Image (tube, rainbow, N blue to C red; front, side, top):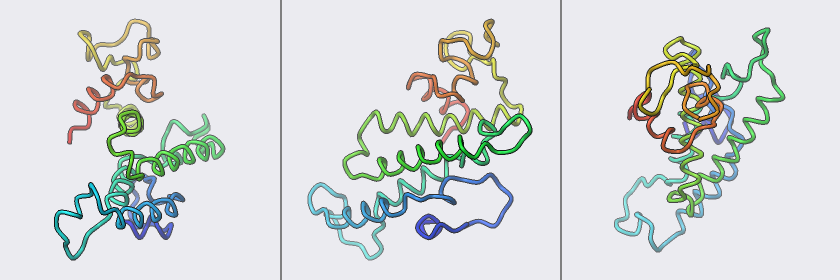
Amino acid sequence: MFYAITHNRNFYDTNTQKKTDRSCSASKKINQEASREKSIRHGHPSTLHSWWARRPLAACRAVLFAQLVEDPSSDPAFRRPDGTVDEERAALKRKELFNLIEELVKWENPNNESMINKARAEIARCVASRKIELGELKKETIIFGPDEGKEHPAGHISNQGLTAYEMKLMRCRPEVVNHFLAKYAPP
């Protein structure tokens, strides 16, 4: 998979949804952070024991996140009404995802709560989008609170950040995102 990211090649040869790692252009930053991480000698797990095939955590974080997030070209949210991909919007979202990957791989950011919340929100957006597309979840479904599972009386945009569609639009608070992922995409 890392080869696929660094060499911008398709690692899988299946008809599954296109993942972000298949079209990742953030490989230069990932490689820089992985090299930098290998030279850190204080506060890094590698200082405890030297093992023969150490993998940089930066590259692992990048690959895992990229596998969990769909490429905008395969996300139904970035399609026009005629079914074609809106390349302009998809390119903007892809650039945003690559910037997020570049921030995630930095040694200083694994404990950065706002960065983790952004990454979790992106993952939840992809899960919500896919569940809505497959009909497993209605747009109007309340996903958090005492009325969870019911349809919101105001429709799919409640302006409260509680419906599945609002999760797809990334308008939910971090606690709603965490609850949604625990219920609809358990580890």
